[in-house]
Length: 168
Image 1 (cartoon, one colour):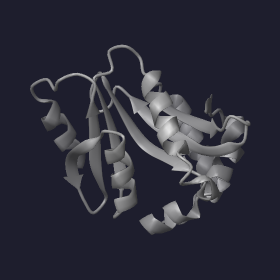
Image 2: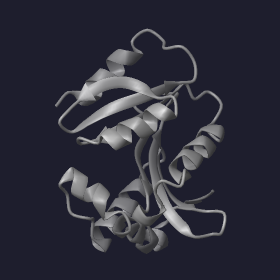
Image 3: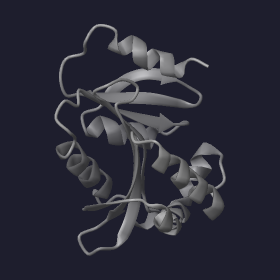
Image 4: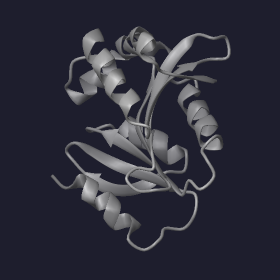
């Protein structure tokens, strides 16, 4: 699996990934983002040094999905995965698990916890994260639930910080 950071000129490829996974957006009751919406999101992400958008390519170089995550969020030492998206025709090939395993292996030293958001009512997404060793962390339904993998024991107050994310 190869990870390519998204720059503004790659926004059309990110958009193509979104178009290749329409079931995800339908599950959320949302429309697939348009190219101008993706371009605006990429431009915003580039301004945030903690936010990372990456294209995922398989070993043959074919675009198979994307990864959106934020470092040191919600607190220093945390990494929050906002979206792991695998193209519909490439699902059930272990590409998502492979991407996350490689992602975890390249996290910077000092990463304490990885959070993964599961948007909407998505039991398949929950099973995916649980199979990778993530456990339920916080219920913020109907919008999302959070799953976490601790890379070291929780420090006092860490759970409180995640809970604040769910508050309106």
